[in-house]
Length: 103
Image 1 (cartoon, one colour):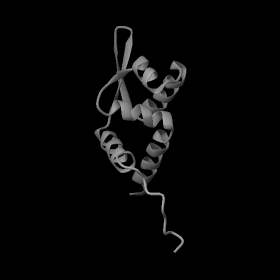
Image 2 (image 1 turned 135 degrees about the vertical axis):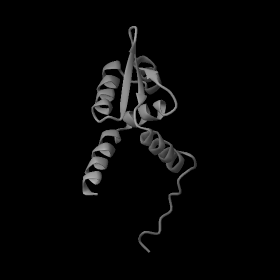
Image 3 (image 1 turned 180 degrees about the horizontal axis):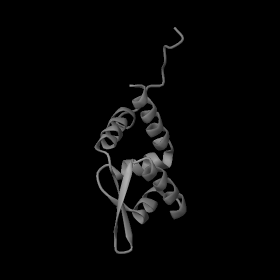
Image 4 (image 1 turned 120 degrees about the vertical axis):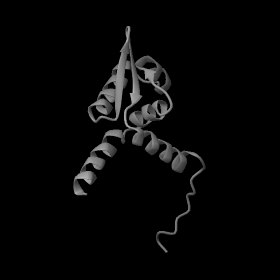
């Protein structure tokens, strides 16, 4: 069990950057080229490549080459499920700002 916790912590660390989360949101329904990701995320190609490499090294995404293009996709179905759950929890409705933690 503890080994799984360590693996999960590494996975969460690898996706816990805003640009990497944006990339994963884009890839959850389709595979995209680096230029398509760059245009959607609105950052440099070098920056996108750096973040894609981090995700690839952790086994979160994979790619295929076709001619001069590299197409990226989420490799693990569990990541797609995780991204959809995160979107549902955090993006589907406005968050309440009231808190009773100090009561």
